[in-house]
Length: 226
Image 1 (spheres, one colour):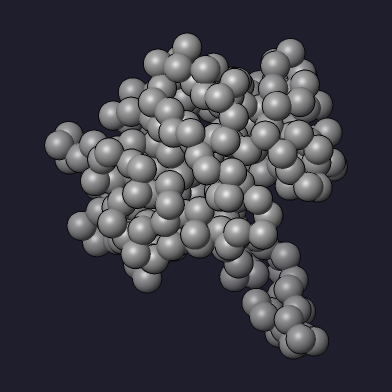
Image 2 (tube, rainbow, N blue to C red):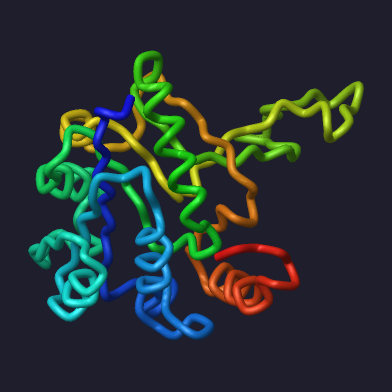
């Protein structure tokens, strides 16, 4: 297990659509990008980190933290490019056999979350082809007007509902060759690393941004180490 070296890939665009400049705009006393670099710099289970961005300014910050950098072609930073192409392109830049896709948009996930995921991956790699950070959703779901995880009668207790799994993309780990081949982080035999839904919150809209900022500002009150 100790021979397995994992390189974290950290994609950072300077622009975003739903939340303007979310990676670099003010977030509490910092921004999402630098906060994530600080968190990851405390980890011990990774071999190295590679920050990929179209911005040389962003990459200069990464170098100050001792992270490797990749100046990304702006073509791979537009919303018109399928994410599958981005996965394959950035995967090809990695220098290790195993890679972890890490977004900066999960600000409440601290270094312990990442170290734990890496340690679990090293144990599960023989029986699973990827580790996916996950959230269990215990609500009543419909799709095309049909129930998914419950029956109309008898009405189930919420604690008895079979949870649906969603991916917050805090961290996903797999082999470099598979990331390039699949053009995705999701394999056929995933290990779901279930996280607390608050800690795993992904900033996808302004509500998420505001919520995470409130929790971050009050981290002592909520007893969260970030």
